[in-house]
Image (tube, rainbow, N blue to C red; front, side, top):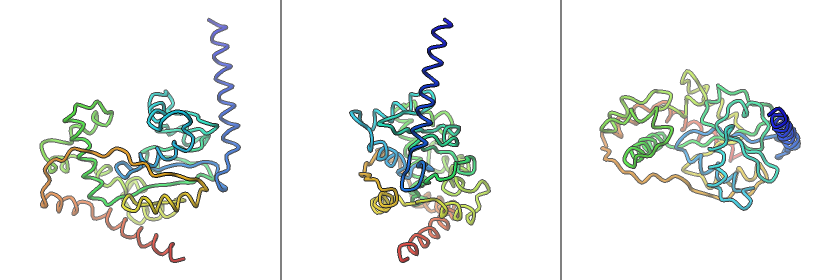
Length: 263
């Protein structure tokens, strides 16, 4: 057993040294790594698949993504590039080519020279997409990890969902960048990202991202929810009123983005 343990330890050390060496040599238009601040239900999974498709080799994007899900540390390597998902410790360490997580930015400590990306969406559409996803999981008895925490939010209607969803999930686009739901702080953090884009203008955002990074990402669209629970105009109006801060943030970001284009 001691010999087996010794060999296993040496193999781990070799893999660790290889990862350090690979990560130390990444030069992505002056950056050392790429990190996606993944806001749920904004099309971020499509973006993750697009980056995986750059070096997927003989596997499909889904196969590589599935391997990341199954891996104990949610880390895979393809063609000399390291990918990390949902592992805050590894994300903060910075030894990767591309990483993503749903973790709020204020809970991370990203290393210098990290290219940061985030995708935002019309606030009402994002929350409705989240709601429809959970309804679909319940209808189809999908054993998704999200249901353990979020399944009880559903109730019998969108109103039940809105009564139960925590503020940090309802106002996720603000909370990801401000623990106090401060629009000014969230605006400052997002405009300090290397790149931000909108679901509604995904193609243009991808072209700009390609230009900044010197890559050739191709559009991939994932996870289209098929469930269509009944939702009234009154419920949508209520939801919009609950998302005033997010609309203020998104409107300001669109003005900022337009001014950058003019420059």
